[in-house]
Image 1 (cartoon, helix red, strand yellow):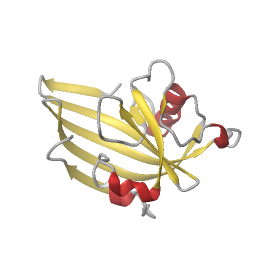
Image 2 (cartoon, rainbow, N blue to C red; image 1 turned 30 degrees about the vertical axis):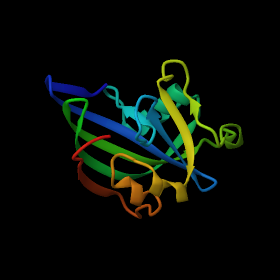
Image 3 (cartoon, helix red, strand yellow; image 1 turned 45 degrees about the vertical axis):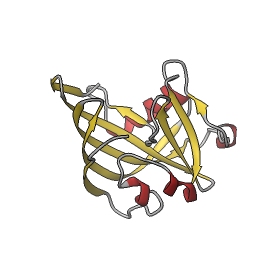
Image 4 (cartoon, rainbow, N blue to C red; image 1 turned 90 degrees about the vertical axis):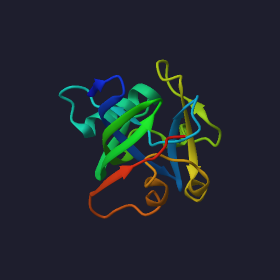
Length: 163
């Protein structure tokens, strides 16, 4: 995984996330110990193209087959988290279920867990209307998930705190 620790308090990482919308609902996840939500994804492995990271991560964490669409955002995200300062480069792709994957089997209203190895994660489908009530990071996504860009956009995000 691409993650560098500069010292005990400074970390640099490359994270890739996927935006999957199904029936006017978006899939988000969180660590079960946290109150905030994020787009599902993970860190790239050495030599792995970012669009392939999403396919691998979703297969590992959920057992779902997805394909990547266009790259929506590249973000430079700066945030404090658990007494450490992070500098994160984030690639966010639009995702779709693979043609041979039955979306109806995985859509549910209640929260659900991931595969073994991802049991610390909670996944949930939220209606697009519910997003304004959530804490989502990077914070710019809260408003932008309902207005997807036509072209890839670059965002620099400085979070004062991560709750």
